[in-house]
Amino acid sequence: MATILIAEDDQAISELVTFNLERAGHTALVAYDGLTALDIAQKQAPDLIILDQMMPGLDGQGVLRELKRDSRTQNIPTLFLTAKAQTEDRIQGLELGADDYVTKPFSPKELVLRIAGILKRSEATPGHVISEYGPFKFDKNSLKFYVDNEEIDLTGTEFKLMVFLVEREDQDLNRNDLLSYVWGYSHHAQSRTLDTHMKRLRQKLGKYSNCIATVRGIGYRFTLTPADAPESSDS
Image 1 (cartoon, rainbow, N blue to C red):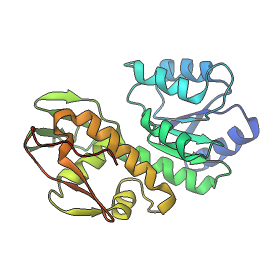
Image 2: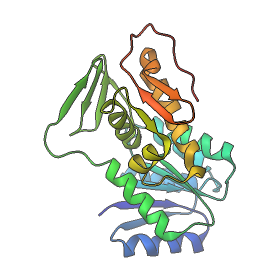
Image 3: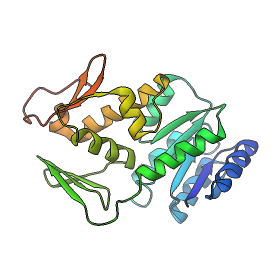
């Protein structure tokens, strides 16, 4: 099972999360401020990090920015667990590179399931499995992704989402199906999670961002289109 860092300044919440993670078989590390969380992450490289937004020393978004700048920690999956429930806060957290976003009050059972989903998406596939689609190449063993043979840094969630899109080329993909397959839930309230990840994928695809098109009223469609075609919108 996984080693999970809980960065949470509320001791009661950190104890609740620790109890449920350990009951699920995981090992929990705890930090009560952002700077300590960053130090533990850099020294112990946990399998996943749970971040509160509002912490002393360095807030959750500041911690995530530093994690993404450091080669030792940039690929560690992260989940925000926070009382900041506004849509803008959720979008900003996801755009910084978080894999998921859970708001307080929360269901411990749902949190553990969300964590299990993130860990599963971050697992490498046994064996050397490489797939190529036009300018895109996926190494499912190492979870590495290449565009025109140049490696592009994707999170585990982004990698799984990109594979799902490419393997269903030219199909109109329903939003709920995408949420269910990639994140394990399909509740409409979480739809901005999907939109934010699509926006980040488009940015990382660069000149190929137009391959991901929005299908109004349905979801998204992936098509291998010429690089010089007009780029799709971000929404």
